[in-house]
Image (cartoon, rainbow, N blue to C red; front, top):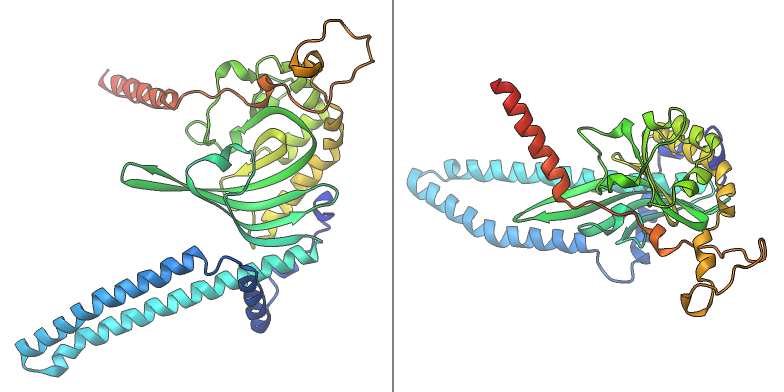
Length: 362
């Protein structure tokens, strides 16, 4: 993947250039032939819904027409609602057809865009096996329009959604994301960007306040950094002033998560899109960060050296300095941030509401 190294070097023409309808149909047929599990679930649901609507509505429509004809004595009068319903049905059919056509064209454009920039395109991945905080919530987890590159390291741009059930109601949450493969596992670190927050953080998880770390300069004006307790010096090693500057200049509107050997950038808007400006922004951001990630490969967790003996027991002696280098990895206490309970933000909201009402009364 070469294009993110310089935002001006990528080719955005396939996103907006006219397309050949025959090529779109051929690409759609190719995607259909890749499926080995039969018809897609969404297609099955659509077919079942149309069939049920036909079975239920046609008898009702026939009964209404017969009743109107018998009551008015004029078959022409009875045909008026039938004609109106047919016109509505035709309009709905046209809208559905246009939606399907536009979706197919968008997939083809993204496919051609990926090809033009030495990348690959995948239309969808159900329940993607990624360790980021957004990928294990709710149900019906789905990543779409994935654009992937492998050089100089694996990078994936995609859109993601999941559904959370609350009683009889359900809410679907949507994210855009960029996933970057790192050289070694690192401690779980989260940068909550202040630039995309509303009333409080927009992240789907909240973390214990004791894990907040303040960094030098104006970094705290743009991000809230969380790292596992005891890993403060490690975070300072990873976020040197030059790397902090890269995040401030290029990723101040993106939430960031480091977990295992992945770096994730999250945005509440679509990341994989037909908008060239969005791709220029994301490619420029990733390109700026990639030039600094190599130094993270040298990080080692010294806590692993103490458990290098078989069975995970501490070594009975202190090895000479420089004789043992900890293997790549993260000790258990640094692999995941500790989260707060879901009741904490609820209490905050309730407290704010009570304070607001008391201030209004006074």
